[in-house]
Length: 425
Ligand code: GUN
Ligand code: FE
Image (cartoon, rainbow, N blue to C red; front, side, top):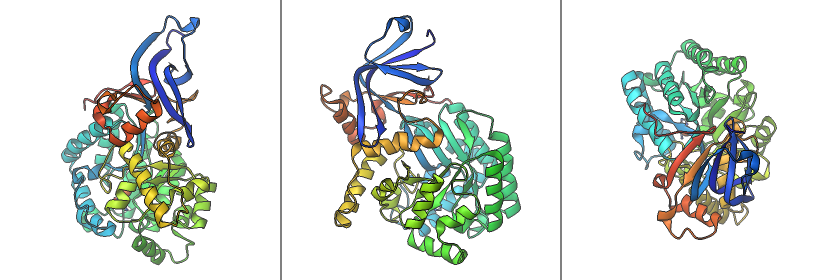
């Protein structure tokens, strides 16, 4: 009992997408980094425990970002008038090539992680670059930071510029070296298999990394059905395959281990059925979809089909690291989709997007993103007194923070029960 940590404040989270659970002036009891219970009083048995009193502030789950390209950070806000494939050639690839240089990688990755921390992201699935050494630097810096992360060395052995292309054998070898070195090194930070997308990987590499994923039980992340030209390209590369998802699936990269697939804007019914049966999580990245003009994901359709949906910033296709911002843009875009679809796809509610950015995406990390018993305690403490009247409904205060708040309102961050301060990297 004595090692139980107790936090007091206005607790708000989503057990399910339909509604918020609110405990005004409540206590959350944390044991061994996990939520034990929530109560409105402290019973006798806990009377000797330390209580951290956050007063009238909000206690919310930490944000989960399921899609982020760390080596694109220096490009934030650049090239936002381009379309996807053109933007990749002109902006993303040349910047990523710089991560051959370990000094440059160290400098940028330190900045990236501090900014992720600042914006309240407590768990993240992140792409590195093709470079083994830079990816190890990113893994080590995340371990130091206390943030939970899956970090992937990107595989690209074809259809990529000479300055950002690997030899197939080397690509597989480097992926395995990282897998072996890191799969058991840290509880919170782990490697993830990361084929960039189907066009950039040969069948040899896809097979090789599928085998590594199975051998070390390592999850998978990639892009899926983001843009019409990209989908046509995949069809040309694999004319025998049923669709885009089928290509990943035939190499054991589609739910054979936990898998996240970003965008899924043009997924067919068959692909969606495969996602559902294989437990693949779809990642909605609305800022990126707008910036590089890829389209609007029919998120409502995915939810109705029982597919888990998480949120992604997709830096730097997306320009905002804050998952609160991604939540509000998700609602806005769902309204455009609703109007465009003759009101077929009902707009998303605040509780639905909050769920996606916490418990929905959190599923990828285990029991993460909620304050139910047994969940790892990842939380943000929100001081919203600068945003308006605080003597009002807790759910409205959260809505207001999501729409008009920013990192200045986040006064503390917890991951797996530990308070994490600004990382000294
Ligand atoms: N498809 C392949 N690579 C990328 C990337 O870096 N960003 C986005 N948004 N889509 C991609
Ligand atoms: Fe991406």
